[in-house]
Image 1 (cartoon, rainbow, N blue to C red):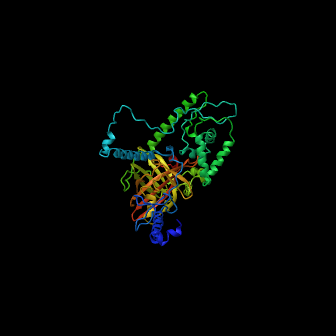
Image 2: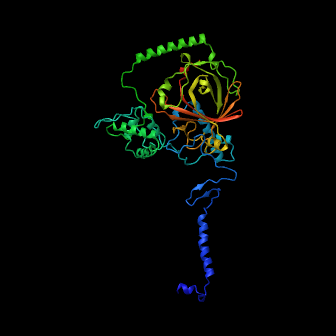
Image 3: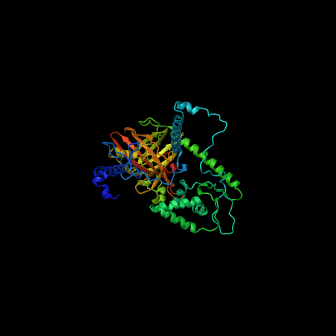
Length: 493
């Protein structure tokens, strides 16, 4: 039937109802398309499924940066190796691990007391659960020297074997790339250039090099070093940190050894007699404790004392470290201007402030009262957050910078968490810094570390101590960088 006849009064159809139907059909989908579905959390999802955070009335969005610092984007790197830590660092990590174990037991058995869970006997089952092993397991025999590339046709000497399950996705390839100057690193990459894991890692490194000039220069140096090598590739070639070289095959000098031991014995006896004659028991005498009352300090730690700070680590470190040495005074000595005690997590450090209070030497003492850790820290930056949102950037329980697995400074240098390394953010460790006749300063702190890639005699690791301070009516965030120094060079006692 023609449309004209359908719309005519004779057809029995009315133009008004038809117009209403068409209007409803057009308007209803338009409203549905213009609204985004909501979820139960209060956030609104766009048509592409991307959730945008909702803002409650009277509340602004949480700031994502503070004084130029932000959480780094995730990378393939994992926390630094344990060899960078001291005995105090390991003790803090173990205490955190024990707290995590107690939390795990409480979660698994909510009604059971934590103390009872610690002594609970393991249940007896017919089939023990499978033990989860780490992805990388080094062989027990690491005594043989690993080979260098040789000319075609020659045989490779005996070596320690590299496990087949070497994990190229962890931090070690990046640490090795940063330490190309170390012996055996370029050779390790050369031998494994055909591995599938290496190819995947190299692709990721090339992608990162697009925005990171440091990585690009390291890859260029690696390619140049590998181009200078030749010969067959050995898929079992071990990394340089698994190397333990054996002594040369030569007649053992027993006579020289006995002579040396006898000389050392005489020197030790003479030193002991001289010590008792002139110093007595001065090492175990103590002065009154700090205001925190954690432990008495040794008498040889005092304000005004002069220290012979060795400039060699700072000179050899050069541009590979951020640490700034203090200006040396007369005779190459620095004066201790202020003495404090840092206590927390069952550990106590002595801090000797120099250079107008902008740097300090941090010393940890063993049970005998002798230094077993000595680090020099200098000022890097200080931030005074202006509001609650900016404080959340540093101390938010889920995404705060202090305790995040990685920390990136303003120049793009990344540090890995040294205490309790792992992929998730941890609560900062609680410390109290005390001094005689001063109000205590509470700190929420975390220690980070990175390999410097410097030569063997230069500092191998640089530390980053980040702390939120509360003292009196003030609060601030400080960033200090440090390196290991030898206690013997300070002539403390």
